[in-house]
Amino acid sequence: MKNTVKVQRAIKNIGQSELAEKLGVSRQTIHAIETGKFVPSTLLALKLARVFEMPVEQIFELEEGD
Amino acid sequence: MNYFTLFPLQGYWGKFVGLAISIVSLLLLLIYTLAGPTFLLKVFSPEKQLVSLLWLFSIGLFMLSFSKEKIDDERVQLVRYTALRGMVLMCFIGLFSSFSPLMIDDLGMSLMAKGSTLALVLMVIVAPLLTYQVIFNIGLHLNTDWVYNDLSAEDNLKKNPKFFLFYIIFITLLLTGILILNVLK
Image (cartoon, rainbow over all chains, first blue to last red; front, side, top):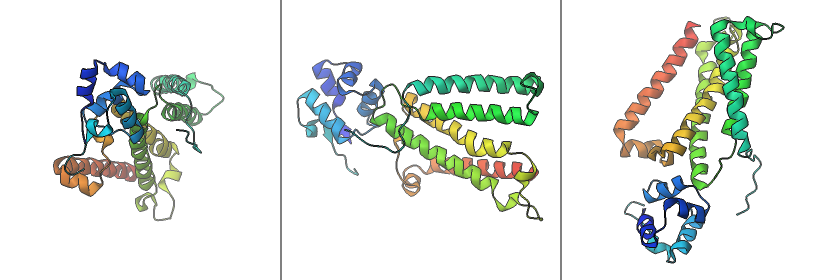
């Protein structure tokens, strides 16, 4: 699964730590999501969408084989 | 969300208590190994002293392993699940090697019973808990890809045959080593 968390974070000018704090997760979790290693739950994805003020589909995208 | 669990973990404080117990007992085990058993409580036999220290070390590792992190989010829970799988596998490897047919002599006696319970304690309690700690901390701090890998053995084999071959060789060598050690005992 691809995501644009890093890009959206840059647009909003938010650091990993700040975003992590807003979502109630650790900074390493944000890093793991951005690098595509960890796929977040629906709950966390929706929280991300709320922070970035956009639909989840614009942040996460299915890849071939998913 | 409000989940109910039958086996709740201890709070973050458990990490510190577990770590303290583990370090103290490990230091005492080192002193025991280097200076001999007599320096400790003389009322206990040397074997009882050693088992007590191992028991204390295991309790420390147990507390360290089954405590929550400061920020216990869903990634930590996934890493914990992977580490628990590793721990259970190691536990079964220990059990399988301890109670294998090779461990029973011609008279039907368990070679383990003739020796001491130390090997069993190490294989079934300490080694799995140490495995858990290694996997959990690698996953938590180094954020490695394989911690999040939930593919089956067959899928992993298709995806990365070289690594899987290395893994199989490592496990085979580990099991062979344990079996040889048991037979030599």
